[in-house]
Amino acid sequence: MARRADGGVDVEWHTTAARHEAGSPNVIGVYSIASACKALTEAGFDSLVARERHLIDTVRAGLAEVPEVRVLSLFGDDAPRVGVISFVVDGWNSSHFAAALSAEYGIGVRDGLFCAHPLVRTLLGSDPQDPGECGAPEPAAPGERSLNAIRVSFGAGTRTSTSSGSSAP
Image (cartoon, rainbow, N blue to C red; front, side):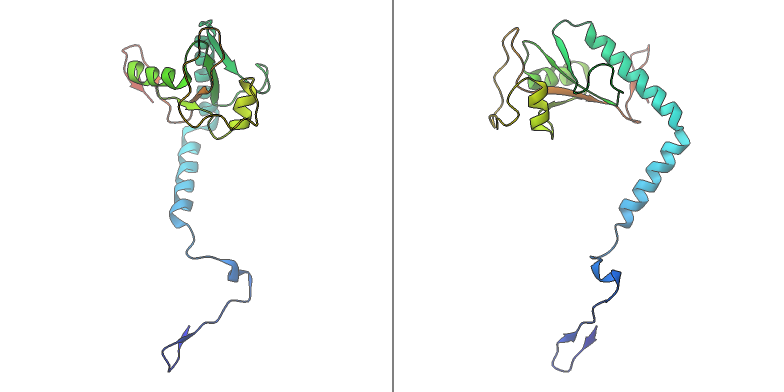
């Protein structure tokens, strides 16, 4: 960039691939991803996978003991499991149930239709194109399907309960 006598500037644009670069590269983001990769590698991928499978199996077994719980699955129980379980509880509004889990047990879950409204509506047995209501849905009556869902997610930072009642990573 060169300043002209009239106070303006002359700009010289790149003619190579660099002309498509916008601003500064995301150095902080790259460093963060590299640090996360390093931490996961140090923890041991196989160990993390085994731990996640144990957490999933434990939660699924617990949910199976509650007759009002219906686990939502696009591909069925035989599909490979990932660190996410979505479910509804008959007779409960999922938002109220999620709030109770948080307030009473310190369990953080997500409720609603998440970022997949048509998919969750399909899993709930309603019209995937229905825009739904923007406000909080009314509580589902016993035996009725819930109007939204609850999601439990697991990851490397998920804490597990110990026999003393405290949490450990």
